[in-house]
Image 1 (tube, helix red, strand yellow):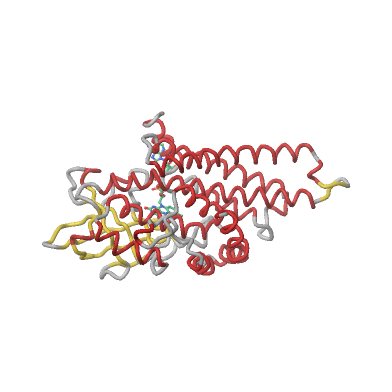
Image 2 (tube, protein in one colour):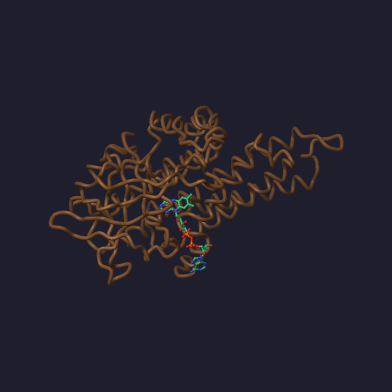
Length: 368
Ligand SMILES: Cc1cc2nc3c(=O)[nH]c(=O)nc-3n(C[C@H](O)[C@H](O)[C@H](O)COP(=O)(O)OP(=O)(O)OC[C@H]3O[C@@H](n4cnc5c(N)ncnc54)[C@H](O)[C@@H]3O)c2cc1C
């Protein structure tokens, strides 16, 4: 039922704008409005904080179906979960009450600020600092590649509070867009997900009350990594959706397109490609749903499964979307058809929330 609801909403209210959002590189406001109106913008927020209380699998299905129509728009529910999960996992009751309510209502979005210009795969090498000053912390530094920066009201920011301790000297904070000293860089000019703004976040003597710290001092990196264990499953979901959109489009196209006097779908060479695409996609889906169940139960092997689902599904999305372009021939290579956008959008799923090389490092360290 949930899938039917979100699919029909995505097809009627999000898909019609997907090409324009990509072409114009603009935020998908129509998608945000439609998702908020149906309470699907941040479904993971627990009911006790005013949310829909969707479990991890339901959240995956929402993101998957939005991504099938528009990958940029799927970053609304996905990044709302990414940004707020540190608060849900490790925040005080006061922080949860203060920040999850507006998120659930659709009054505010939440971003996640871990990466920096010189600290990507090696996130613990971050330089952003937080220095205690009485009942306040003062933050200084630059966060890079922050999805929905400028649009979101709230930011989970990881910063060094003890430079002698590397990852154990990092703490997490909630920073608000309106805090004095917060500003944003120009939107990055990207290959894909062009409707999802990616900007630098500048923290210039941002003075925030001490109770904005998420969890204990020195636990921020652990919270950031625990968060990714869960949200890599949502990136896998995004990859599934993008690939499904491309497969569905190609499946329809090959039945219409005629060469040598018959639909190209009659050629076994084409049928075998479609069979492989569907097979890989279904394998990725089963792994992702298994990982979602592990995320919901917080199983001991979630770290492996989160990394495996994200890595496998994103590699499959890249293959399936590339094959979809191939199935449309020259037409597939043009912006008159949606599959080239899907191929460009798929690429990011192999890079963010840890590149697929990093996922393989994580898997190797956590072999089942
Ligand atoms: C569009 C977009 C949105 C993003 N959104 C967010 C966000 O909202 N919040 C956030 O905090 N970050 C975000 N990121 C950042 C993203 O997570 C990083 O770009 C990613 O982790 C890689 O870091 P890097 O770009 O510095 O690459 P690098 O770490 O410099 O990696 C370069 C290459 O080296 C490889 N590599 C690095 N170390 C190793 C190793 N030990 N072994 C093998 N290979 C290695 C990498 O896999 C990669 O191929 C986003 C990025 C993009 C592009």
